[in-house]
Image (tube, rainbow, N blue to C red; front, side, top):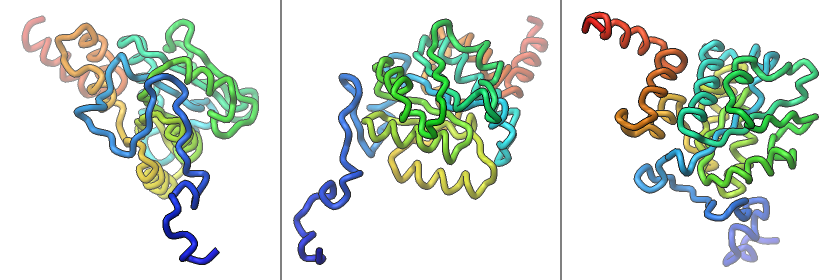
Length: 243
C-alpha cells in the first residue's frame, strides 16, 4: 500500500491494535488528558492493584531503596483500609523462584480482598480471574504498583489503559533491576497516557483535608511507612508541646 492510499484513513485503520476497547464497567472511560480538577482521585472513584510484590522478585529491585519499595507497597495496602478502597493483589507463579506475596502485604490487605495467584501469565490482565476482579471494583481510576517496573507494572498499566481506565502508576512502590530499565518504562507509560505518581502523592490526593476521618490513618501511614521522617517530626512536636 502506498502513502497516498493511507490518506483519509483513520488511525485505527492504520494501527488496529490501537483501537479503544470498551470499558469494563459502567462509567469507565479512557482519555489521554488527566485533569487534576476533573479527574482527581477520591475514595469513591479509585481502586488499587498490587502486582507481583513477591519475596523473590523484590530482591531484583536495584533502581532505588528496596526496603522503601516494600514499605510503600504496604502503605498502599493500608490506604485501602483507611479509605475503604477496593484492592486486588496478584502473584506470578508463587510456588517457584518468584516467591510468595510479601508477608507484610498479606497481613495488611483488608479482609476479603482478592489475591489472584497466576500460573504463568506475564501480564496480570491476561488471567481472566484478575481481569474480572478488577472489573468488579467498578472504579474508573486505578492506582497500580508492581515489581518489576518494566514488566509487572508496565503491562498491567498498559492493559488497564486499553480497557478504558485512568491509570496512576506508582513508581516508588515499584522497582526494577537498573535505572535504564526504569527510565525507558517511564517514557513508555507516560507516552501511553498513564499518570506517573508517588505513594505520598496518591494518598494525599485521596485525603485532601486532614480534618476528614482519614486524617489520623494517613498520619500513621506517613509516619510509619511512606515518610518515616514524618513520624519523628510528629513525635518531636508532641514532646515539645508537652503531649
